[in-house]
Image (cartoon, rainbow, N blue to C red; front, top):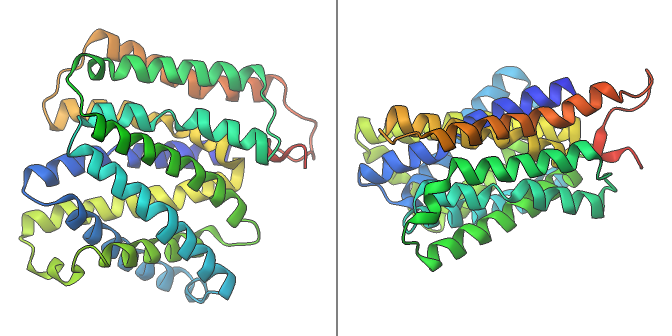
Length: 302
């Protein structure tokens, strides 16, 4: 439980930088598809270098790994990130993130269906706190004129991401998370190569390159690999709950980096989100299972 919590919290923190870096890139004149193409190719190169140094055998895939990586990257992650970045061109980052962060509820419901996750009081309390916290954190989204097309893109992104997390949990059985991460990133890079020429990366200015490099390293390589590790440890439902630290990080960075105001309601929302992350952990500690029993929470019935 503890390792999964740590992996998910770090992953969520890294993902919290995504909207900020995307907005900076858009302000610098880069297009959404352009950034995504460079992001995933650089992420693939970074991941390949890391695995080469760590254990070269992790780069050698089986046919099963290749197929799973292709489905995750080409079929889910590429589409989800495309929809999300496109939504940012029509609606504020806060609105898009608010919509995306309905996914813990969706993933939990799907986990109840596919993995027989029990709807314990801690899980239900956590989801209620997370939803309330996100609403307060992004309260300003409700008072702005919104593009229905942009909202539709964000909703579609949330749905694809929810199914993606459930699929990851299925695909990680019998697989090394780092190997799957690498091939999922490679497949996503190939997906975006159909939309933008990746070789134009070499023509970027130093400023533009620095933005996409950080985009590739922090909310991609680190975030995705730790997300997969978290799902391996505690399952997709609990990972999605613990990862909800992301909007807290996004709002804080938006204030520090983009100069956006943070008001009292948003601070209260952050506290509710943190309480929502703590709730299932408190329940687990209070009702901890006997020693030696499997602690993988969302597969307890299997």
